Amino acid sequence: MDEVLVTGLEKLIGFLESASPELWRILVKQAMVSGIQYVIGAIACAVIAAVCIRGLSRVSDSDLDSWDQDFLRFGLWIFTTITIPLGIIIAINAIGVLYNPEYHAIKGILEILR
Image 1 (cartoon, rainbow, N blue to C red):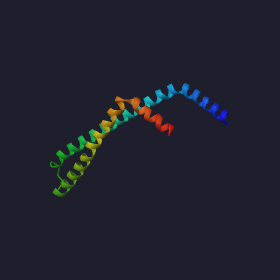
Image 2: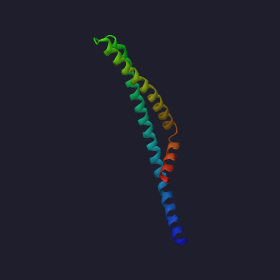
Image 3: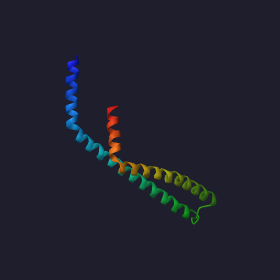
Image 4: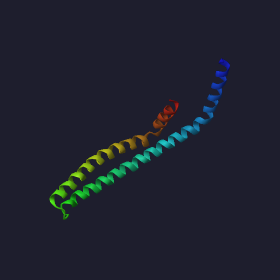
């Protein structure tokens, strides 16, 4: 039984030695893609917040009655206060992933091994 285990481990080690450079390259590339996705999310949050802020400035110029203006103003403020911190958090994650994709590749390897 020990010989079968040793033989299996030797085959596994041989496979990992040949496949690991390719796996490493793929995981680093995936970390970069994740970082770019974070950047796109942060930009989307910034655009949404800018549109909400612009909408807030135009609410008082609209022909809506006072209650509708207050309701719209409240909704835009809530949406803005959610998207700005969310965009900041996403941008911080994007910087971390793009600055050090190797770390995230190592995390990917450890997740595979679990």
